[in-house]
Image 1 (cartoon, rainbow, N blue to C red):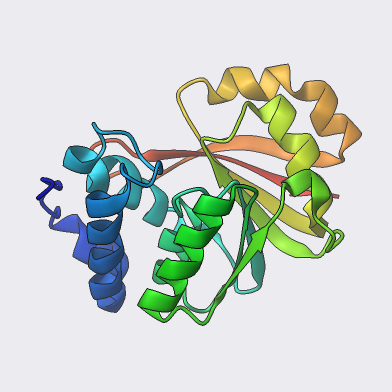
Image 2 (image 1 turned 90 degrees about the vertical axis):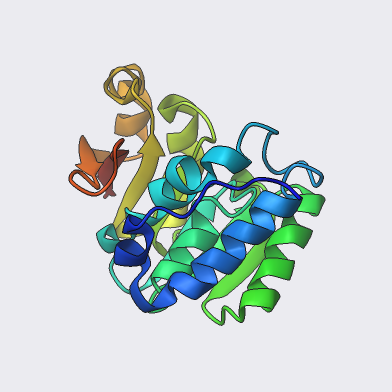
Length: 208
């Protein structure tokens, strides 16, 4: 039996009446994630704090609509956000077949009617600039992420991207790409202060 991090008390505050779904997903990912190549062996003991809550705490940033998660992988942040925000339609965009299989299994197991799983690279997205927002976590640096995410977003929509400590440097390095893809007002927001020991850092911007 794999030892998964004990659920922090704040998890119930963040997920509210959706906490049971969050528990089921976290347990499934903790027990099967490594064997299925979704997470590394060091992740189960820090799964809640480092991954689940880091993803879930940004849920209030999204307005009701259709949101894409590029490179959804294990479902971080897309599946976690779909649990936390049943009023939003989530499109999980993932090119790797085994990850798509995992995502589809979890959508079925959790009964998530607000999720569509699409096997594709973001560059091959056929839906046009139709999404109200796009998110991503641990995919690539902003200068390579902007060209594959901004074209998916409608005029006036948002990029809401989970980033690490180098976010401000990434914004500077992506200046050319931000201009080319009409991404404006790129800024860093810290989310979850007062809730999480390490708040989540988001690069947020508007696509015009």
